[in-house]
Image 1 (cartoon, helix red, strand yellow):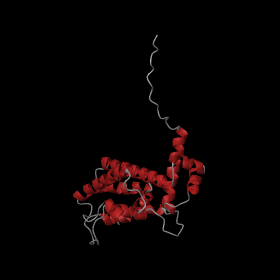
Image 2 (image 1 turned 180 degrees about the vertical axis):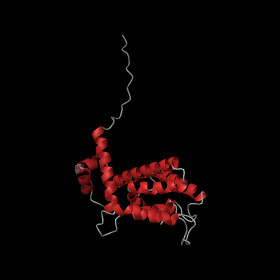
Image 3 (image 1 turned 90 degrees about the vertical axis):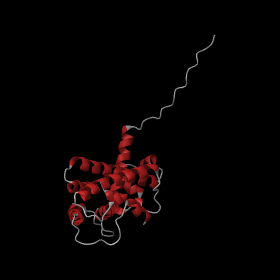
Image 4 (image 1 turned 135 degrees about the vertical axis):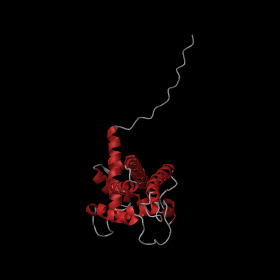
Length: 216
């Protein structure tokens, strides 16, 4: 008598537990804050302390510092792109949409993207490449609308905006000025006034893209 052959069932990868996902998000959020405040070389145990987890928990989620930085950069780019898309969809005034995006991007700690400009950062990572393209496309869309409406000066590009955002949302080096948040939106508004057309001066150099920043 022949016995029936039981087909092998594909092995399913277990889904991460809810508490593990929460810990991962807490680590990324803490790292995002601390990369802005102290730079990408901040000790991992300090990130763990701010996230409220043990050092071992970081290494369960991230193989090394590079993987954590990549995850933070991806998180920030995705969140900032979502803010740009929401502003474009919900604001009728093109410059109001750009203004809303700039302030929202500051709240998302866009200064944490600074490690992306480092020579040692893996900019060819497939997910990062796609996220960078999405971010540049979304922000350029906002800028194009404002430029076409005659509200944005013609000699600025996405890279110019991102440099200014990153610089204006980071504490001054060596000052311990960690309460800078109370001034950020005020200074961003001054910057936005300078972006409006008609331009009051001619800018030196040429408009910068995100790729230009990577090559500099």
